[in-house]
Image (cartoon, rainbow, N blue to C red; front, side, top):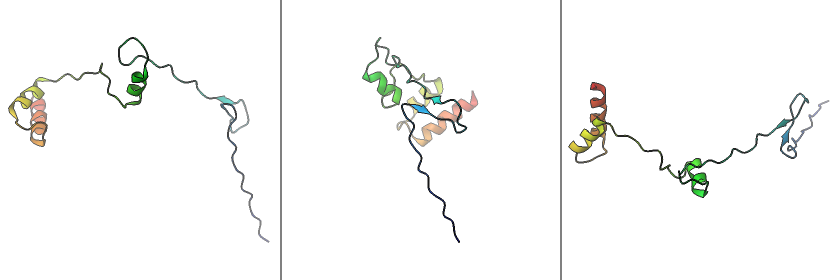
Length: 95
């Protein structure tokens, strides 16, 4: 005689509280993070939300170009290219 196991469907947690497997105290979900001003304009806007998600690049983050980058960019007609990247790497290695 074969016995079949009953399938138990999981239930969704109610009102943002998840239960512990051991049946002890319930675990509360962490609250949402406060949004910060990422664009530097003094207020939190939709633009700050998009910067936070990575959709828009932040204007406050500017890359600093080193001397090797400037030298190679001036000397190669096609930039960026594989040859130019190799020249930058070679220049940085010799420093």
